[in-house]
Picture 1 (cartoon, one colour):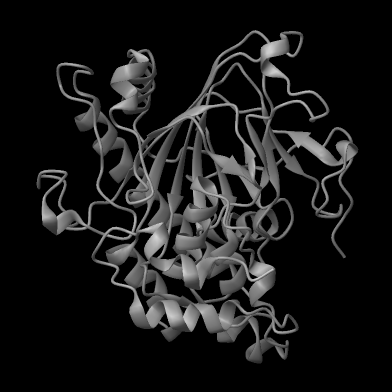
Picture 2: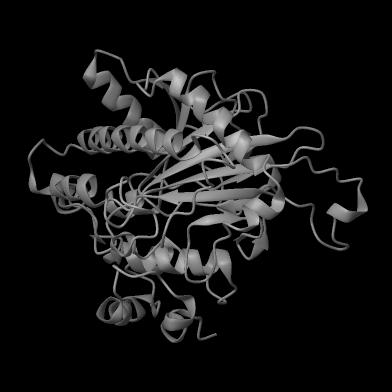
Length: 385
């Protein structure tokens, strides 16, 4: 039985340098099956790089609004600047910039070169003149996160009992080569709820990000040390996230925060938990954060592992989920209101969702080597309700 959380409980802290591998795996298993969150110390991302990245990110968001707007993402390009994202069909109180692994998988290739086309689109960086060294520092930090993500994914596999070199581990080998990860830089300006311009009559107060789960495999989050706005729903509470169920994540200096995503939940047949979380606004402080979303290859069908089902005499809980389809719908939902919010529940064996049929249709016509176009696939993706 999973123990109940108490008021003073905080999410676990895990030391990646722990020489006792068995103890480390037990900690990871417990964290991923309960909170779905943990703070990671001694993670090997160089602290000087983290500091340079923080400073570079702050310089980006301090650029003139018109300069940032020239990098705005659109319905044909998921990457770039934005300040109008929808989470659960509600606008977030933030600015952001998304940068992802280039389609060519070569950062030395010009960003808008045809070989860099992919479902998520082309990266849009500010010029060296507008934001000196921003691209170089961001790429360095991105690659460190990718390396750490691969290491963590393999530890998660070991924690589930997957042996090195086994067939069940092959998906991690493919992910290391073909991952479609992206790095998001968030800026949350102060939000004074006493200012009439920030509150819509009869609407609840704005949130930095509304309650949601991360779609990918795992997330590495870099937070500010002094502004604690990230909250996670207690793991024994309902998914509704009632006000008394939220726990604030208080980041440790030098640590990064890890959480499991929807694809890890399907992959583990529901053993791992993709946690509901949200970001509060602050009336006086500005806040920055950077989640790195470690995602499978677009063509990867994520299915429950044999070791989490048949070898443990457990029923298979999920149908296969095509990551490219799931990602396309999440992006379309962030940018436009298609009337659909795709969730892992749509892929449960006992759910008669039409997403399985839509996924098959999408896979037959999509070209993952070109930019996703919401309008091109609208007839497949939009809700029939």
